[in-house]
Length: 372
Image (cartoon, rainbow, N blue to C red):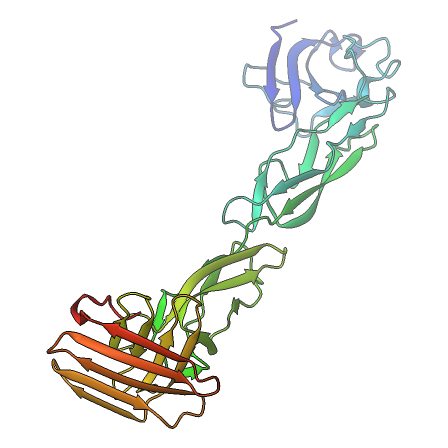
């Protein structure tokens, strides 16, 4: 016998052993002991394929197959090398420790169902999971989608199977990967809004304010409409009101943002006085372009009462004087006389229904705080 050559073929998943030997017995015209090439393929799954050819060259270290035989003379395929399948009389006996067939069937046990949250700013998540556990006679296990795949939001079934080979039926199992969308939409509100008063509601200055809708983005599509409270186009009272805007995505996650709307404020009233002792205050709108021109308001510091009206007359001599009168209002009458030259002023308001009178005397107009 010549040297024995061995190699492993990853593509075939088999160890290949080849040698040249002498034929036992005689053949017409050849006599006994003529040379033959013998090749044995030991597959990973346990199958054994024996091939031989005569009148050929000896094997070499790079041997793959029987050389110079077209086709080679093929011996027997011993499926799965089960006990008794490789019989006596062969040159060698091959029998792996665990036969590929005839033993315990392959059983796959998949991991339990997996639930994760989406990756940041992604409508899904990359999910890694452990391989199924095996028992019995199993081959190569394949899972689809494989571990480390990107799974979209929702539930995806992962199917795992054992490779099917002769003499063994394939095993299978499955489990669910659920990716929950837990990321709320992102809203960007407009900048804070300041608006001048355009009307009055009783003694409260108001304005109808419209504003731009917030922009919205989300990691998944199908975000619902943006809702703002109070909505654009509402009537806002004087002072500062917070507007809160909300949007909800298909998964029920809510995102929000907020901004402020300020109506009136500094500059609404052009003239103001405060009583030296009581703290009562009086203000009047002096801008002729304002929709609420000549609107006046009196506040009682001790009780918080507020009286208001619209003066039928208003005369201003810049830097010198201001006079105003409201004598036809059925509820409150008002007279104001401010002398900027003398740095003093008086205001009187009369409740027509009750006869109550309220007076302001400001002996230092220069130190009056800014109008509210």
